[in-house]
Length: 382
Image (cartoon, rainbow, N blue to C red):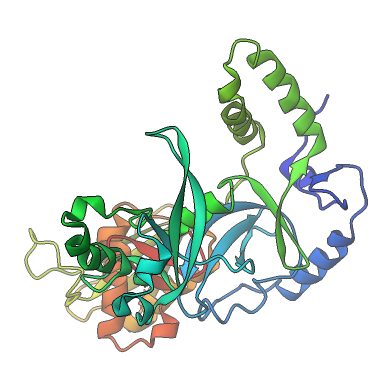
């Protein structure tokens, strides 16, 4: 039997269930055509809240490639790569999921602490049941729900995960008796786990609802594989076996991507400029994409001769009289491509571009790089 192409595999289909027949006719196909007609031009996002054309109500099967937190909206968001249009689309959480921690302190005691109840990030308490694996029993714990992740933890001081042990250690006589769980897990990881999301797998958006996509033909193949493998596998491993088989059997997309490398002037040849200070100009950038396009962006400098440009014929060379214009062209590429590949980009390339743009007076909305504590994120791509 001829193997299906990715475009055929991901053709939108209609179903009232989450398991979708590959032969069904889809209302989604019409809505997705409309989305793509409106978005034929390059998508340039000016902010996660200003996502014209990339936050659709309906979207055909797309790969879940990233999860993050949108502080301006106060909700998690998901990035989905749609392989036919080769674009990334956003979906913001509409389930009401909020950051939280768990503690062994009863609600009645927590309610007496003003530092908790009056905390600007505190939302509410819940009593939930959890399985205590150490004692093999179900226990009741308090779920402290917050309005944003930093209220739980991540700040130098004043987070709920710090306040609870501080307040109750005197009561218990020993701070080790005060338990705070799930307070050091990054929120996006917590969200993925609680929503049972499968990064790398296919999802659709239907009337603004995020739904995992199951392809019947592939699912039948998976069932056959699991049936063979399960003969020798312990029963408690079967759910994990199914997850991994499904992840490996669904096709990987051809991702539209670009590799980026920048060069920065250094007055001392043996010293790399500090990306946090970004005091020296960006003089060159190379961009090579998955479609074979090769670009070299060069900054013209009065004291530097043009030299011999003996490069391969398929390399496009662009000269810039202004460093600001050169960096803007790099930012345009970062907003255009779904996936960006760098070598040490978190520590240098993206980090330097972020701080250099700040030094040159770029407005925040014109910089597509989001700077984290240890990593750099992209507003549109991954």
